[in-house]
Length: 502
Ligand code: C2O
Ligand code: CU
Ligand code: CU
Image (tube, rainbow, N blue to C red; front, side, top):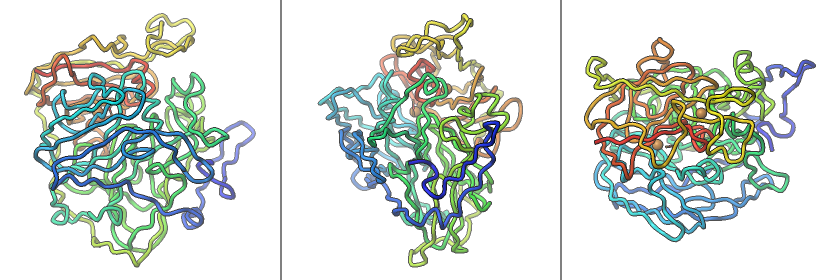
């Protein structure tokens, strides 16, 4: 029941409590006893123009004697992949749970009234039927509940699913597109379990302060799977659906990950990466070449926010507070040459456009400081509104102001482009904006890294990050858009604001 199971537990803690950088077990050994990875059920709306998701409760057998009481959309834990294309789309969201839920379409560019945020709860026994119009480039998005104050625990318990926006032209682009064969959707989540195999949620103030990270990896809600792939180029649609964990992904044998899409869609051409940082709410599509037939483990470094000693741990690269490890396997891959993979060489032109807003044409500049106040003598931000019983910790807020359902924090003029400058004072925070796809123009005064150079709706901020954002979709006072930290514990505790577009 750990990132590293049984015989492969290699963490060695030195006398000083600093973990010696453990080597990862060989991929083939790691894969040996694992069950094949399952893909979520695919709901293809490209013909029907409609779909339905219903929040329900259930018992989930995660494997390894872990059987937990969970919630999901159309199933006991997590939900389907909903494939959609440009045009009208009728969604129906039902709720058979005793709690209010919502279905926020994270990454869909739709008006506030269809966004599924905190102002659009589906009450127990109720339903919500947004008549949407999909009009955006192909991308991987996702959906999750977004009820203020309980998003973190309900997503943790299972209320999330995936979205593919498609234009049906991936064959022309030379991209793998056979669902579950050479086009894999991977929801990455870390969880903790109790002795009885139930999901365990936050147990200490650290779990709120750093966000709730776990010691057990689930891929698509499955414990310890292995992905069996064809001897070809394979596309991985990575969705960080964790509450708080920031992954720094790499292939254990050093083979490159070719980044082809960020949150908002395709890049102009693949970019070879050695590591890929993916924070909660972010998506990335990568191509990995398995044509040599060799097994490989997708692995990650520890979470920069939960390093022992917080910021100091971050600088020193120390052990992850929760896992006790410096690195851990996310998912092993083995190759089966009976599987049919059609793509043998990397595409060179993906047709995506680089974000190119004109900085000279911005209508306004706004600053957002993602504030964490600490206990122990610091005055500002104390009082911890929304902290749910914490006492020691101060507030989570943006510009010193914790989220309030009744307060519109910003009013934006529709059709304009603005400069948004986002800063942090402690830890790193994934900043997400609803209803837009933005351009990252600078990170601490420098060019953004490759994973931030495409269209984004979520970006990890550590210091100061400057964005150019164009607002095309309307949002009224009744159903405003949110901007927030996507560490869900921070969001629930008040690190969120809302804005209208009119
Ligand atoms: Cu994925 Cu406002 O959220
Ligand atoms: Cu969102
Ligand atoms: Cu945060």
